[in-house]
Image (cartoon, rainbow, N blue to C red; front, side):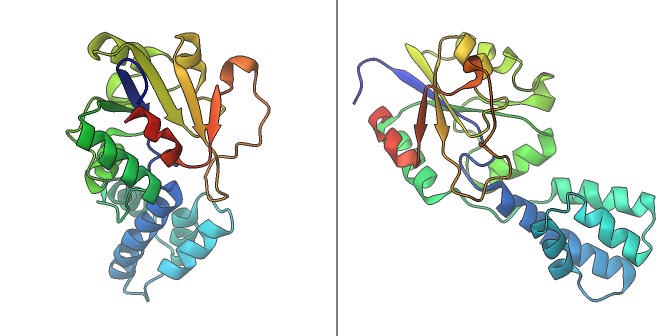
Length: 219
């Protein structure tokens, strides 16, 4: 137990769960929709194969192959963004969140993305209603803009702040400037965004951990 009250703030994607799991959940969901739309065999395996091979527009590629027009393609993408994903907290995240809740420790989330998408993720992960959640579309600012971090500072009753995230390109600049403790969860090889990038000192986390269980000191 550390001295003083510490408010833990988490990134969401590739920090508390694996973003690849969300992508695959969306492709499974949309594969069934495409099959119904075109009266074709379910293209899910093809969608996932495109994704795994680095195709960032797997849905668009399959739609073009099947002659699905832009209007239907956009409707499919919108449906995918709003679907309730089949995802779960990473095991270490689940244990840490459970420990925080048991001890009554506060935590919050700062995440970039669409409101409908991020809230669907939070709902599936059981994280809604557990504390402040700042979503970029809802507040009108994305990282590295400091707006979300300053909002947390104004509303949270904490002696200090700790931000835990995964992306060195954007996650740690604002909290570093604000004097927060910054911790990067090391990529286990499955992250969407590479951590093998050169960044200026202000963008570097103050600490790197291989598992969120290393943060049990904050419970």
